[in-house]
Length: 174
Image 1 (cartoon, rainbow, N blue to C red):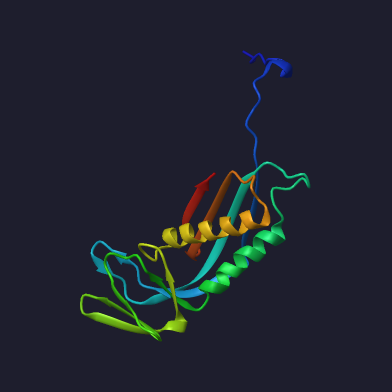
Image 2 (image 1 turned 180 degrees about the vertical axis):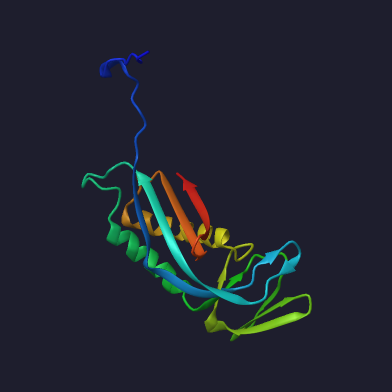
């Protein structure tokens, strides 16, 4: 039995969207962290992170969702902030954190670390998981895109990959 199709003139308009992606290449950073899980704290370690970005929305007057180069420049500024830093989850309820004029002291159950201030990027996140880093990154990237005039974006997704095949994602539905 064949399906009967309605003439195009009587069909409801469909929601359509366009999407661009920008990933890897120069959107990488190396950083150290120690996430907390189930009442424990990982040992200090690092990753070579890759960043994935998806942006959805209607086409602009120039017939693009947004300029790839502009997205890459904004994202690269963020990766440069993160690169070769210790990512400190400043809002962690599990870590004891003390900021000093030239250093940060982080303690967890008898283990204490002291980092030079120049090596630390304190982020307003609960944990230094890929998901929380992706959320911070997406918020900052969205702000940068708004400053560029990208007010038409409907969805922004950021993935932070810790190692191949292992990434945390965050999506802003706008």
